[in-house]
Amino acid sequence: NAGVMQNPRHLVRRRGQEARLRCSPMKGHSHVYWYRQLPEEGLKFMVYLQKENIIDESGMPKERFSAEFPKEGPSILRIQQVVRGDSAAYFCASSPPVQYDEQFFGPGTRLTVL
Amino acid sequence: AQSVTQLGSHVSVSEGALVLLRCNYSSSVPPYLFWYVQYPNQGLQLLLKYTTGATLVKGINGFEAEFKKSETSFHLTKPSAHMSDAAEYFCAVSESFGNEKLTFGTGTRLTIIP
Image: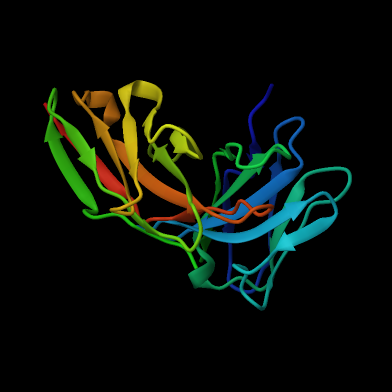
C-alpha cells in the first residue's frame, strides 16, 4: 500500500504565477488535510476535505488560496498570484473515516517564490 | 480553542542519555495527543498517540509519553538516546469530533552529542 503521495516535491514560481500542489491519499482514505510549514515554524492547519466536500477551511487565507478533493483524482491546493510570503513546505495528510485514527503525512511540496 | 506549547526549541543530549521533550497543551475538551518526528526534508512520522485509556503510551523507536491531565502535559521521553534520534519533534493536539485537524507546537530540534 503506497503512502501519501505529493507532487511536485519542489516547485519554483515567480511572483504573480499560479502554483498547483497535488496530493494522492493512501488507498482507502477519504479524509485529506493540508498543512503549511513556514521556515523554522511548526505546521499550521489550512483545510480539511472529504471527497467533493470542504469540511473546514478555517486555516486558509481568505484570498488566492483554494482547495478541492474531487470524486476522482488527487486533492489539489491552488495558490493564485503567488507572493514571496507563500514560500513554505506544504504537507498533505490523509486518514481513513475512523475517529481519531492516525493522519499519514506525505513528503511535502516545497514551494519557492522568486 | 486548542493550543500546544513546546518548551525548548533546541535540546541537546549525549548519546546514551535520557531524552525529555516537553509538551503542554490547552484544550476545552478531553484532548487527543500526538508526537510526530520529522527528519530533514521529509514528512512527519507518528511516534505515538494518546486517545483514551492508559495514560502511559509507548511508541516506536523506544519513545514513550505520559498524559498528565492535572498538569496538562504530554512529555516525550526515551531512556537512552541514539544518534539516529536526531530530528525535529512536534507535539500536536486534536479535540473535535468529526474534524480531527491537528494543532501543532512549534517543534523541538533534538541534537545528539557523540
